[in-house]
Length: 338
Image (cartoon, rainbow, N blue to C red; front, side, top):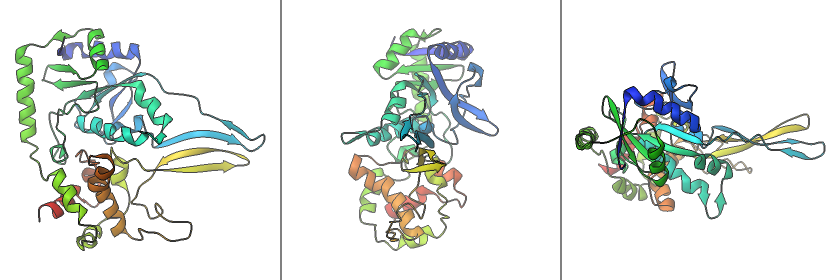
């Protein structure tokens, strides 16, 4: 079977089958927002969401992670218990799956393999959920993606109203499709409806700028006086970095008390004044202008130089969550469209 159909009346049974096979991490509703968490029950899965407040990046790269515990007496080191559970990441949006694919070479490259990230990453089959109602802050088409992008996914589901169209992308996805219960073969009208839906959604997301043009223009914009005006609204709170699905900077701290403690890896941000502070007291990014410029240049220029792609997937979280309404689309457009 190349493409399947899961009716929504059978959705609960399908999720329960996945839960019997392994841990299922999926979007769940908490108060007035959605986050990714291990499902306590099939009914808890929230697949009719627009997008989660935080990306599921934290499933593989937690915000705070204990690397080991230590004890001064006897010079003992203890690793935390291994809590990685094989299973499925269900309902991830294409923009977030693409973001994780961008992180993969960062944590797995010839000189450095992050065993913590890689073990979690390999443990989950990625089941995406195509975007059918983009938000006003979404701009994935400007960054090379689309609402039905399959990058980083093993399988993609698409909501057709009363049923899901199921497309396997990788061998793991094809193996899973063959095992799932209550899956019917997709008919020609299902494929036609899915294609029509994709085109309708794309029509709502006309590109605002070109990623290639952004890269080119920003290459010559390092000393542009426009940065001085742009940064004046920025609070340096790093909300944008903490909701971003591709930000991957971290700090490592030792927490010690009475001869015993732990080493912890924590998310960090180039928007913080201490991020580049040298022991000598010198800071190469002394004020908000340099720090904001670093964030934008890294996303749309430096990352592409080093990795071949820009480090923004157009999810729009930084726009939605910024307390002073800064808009990365406007910042990039200020250089691309003038």
